[in-house]
Image (cartoon, rainbow, N blue to C red; front, side, top):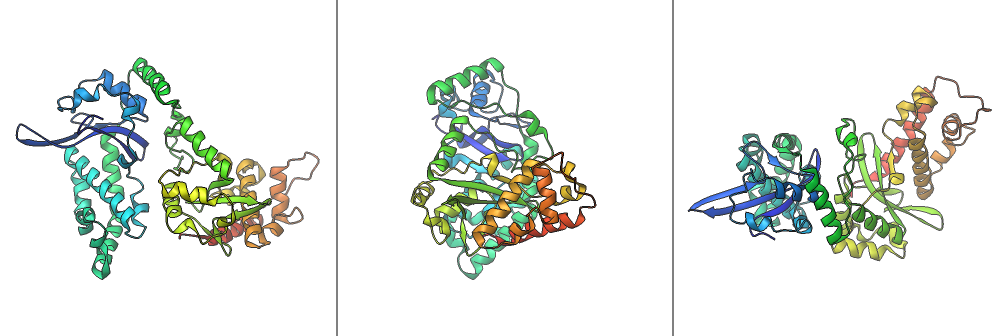
Length: 418
């Protein structure tokens, strides 16, 4: 790795982007710091091959005069992949600060704050400095957890969390405005992709421009850029242990948890009818490495120790299969509009989830409501198993929609933040 220039990953509104960071260095008696880019913007890329293609073909940028830049030009594509401790989840900061100020949380937030200060200094982002100066705790993060111990420390953490909840969008907006994705030479990009495949066996997937441009697409439906090899390895692990990460999106809130089937019966991460649900995949992994290692029904599975071992080693990756993504938000409104307005695939998944949770919790409410002899069950079965010989349900469907929403409300009440 080139000394003093490091690849980093920034998770922003546009997704996971990769760029280069030169932390402070001295030259001719002066201190400097910078990022790959120019006076107007930081240049970042959706994958390592695009970064390599840019580095190899563009010389007009702020890092060109850095003493270590000639070494960067000698790096392979694989050597430009950011290390795990150089991946900064900027949009996930509100989720991070929602946790208790343990060593992991404080350390992660300290690293992000240092990086954000550097970006603010380099790009002259006054708005970012105003947010970071609004809470004393930002300046104490590098001192570790002791600064947030006791009554006074708890107040500092609470002030820090309140500031982030109220104003972190200002930081993200300022960074979104200065971090851009420039075009790269297509020939150089193709060469870099082949080189990466030859070095590591990783074949980068092309990003979906339509998904990225869809303003209605949220984090749950537009996953960050990744590689087919990484995805297959993560999915293969979960398949091997027989446990599925699942995402439940209800009332416009995302909940990440786990489910498996033992003797064909559903079992969730939780106990006594309450499901441990986390706000992000990262938070779920952190939970499994700590408090979520035991004390729930999934410990009955013979493969659970394998999951915990990976989580404790920092090697666990939560990758969602589309069939384990349950978008319940909006289905009630669609049902009220009638069968033709309902997405059958999402309704089918929603019914599956409601029945699974009810069976696991010993609650027959959903099973009864979804019987074909009931009005809601008649409507859902008509959508899921269309039959031209059947009499179509007649509007209005307000009662069926209300019954569906009540079932979803009951499910949400079972989801708890551990």
